[in-house]
Image 1 (tube, rainbow, N blue to C red):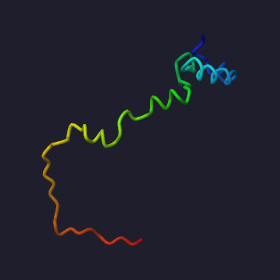
Image 2 (image 1 turned 90 degrees about the vertical axis):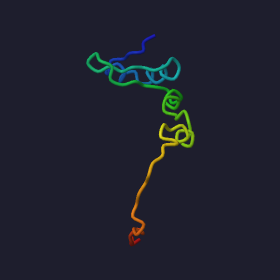
Image 3 (image 1 turned 180 degrees about the horizontal axis):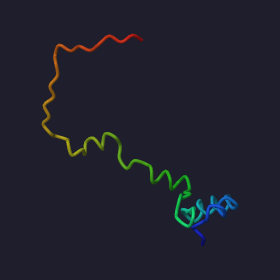
Length: 84
């Protein structure tokens, strides 16, 4: 099964490239014989880009958790006026 497509061929057969990406897996489009881009199904894209943990889990597992940091600030600094 063809998973690499020269750019011109991919352009001429875009519906086939998309169909194969959905049914058979990622399809690589080459430019001057070198891999340039990959066409993925939306399901594969979502799997690759989905965070594997929530923000609260990420923060709870931070290597800085429990680190004793001293934060100093000027107690007289009460902010500034902002016109809205």
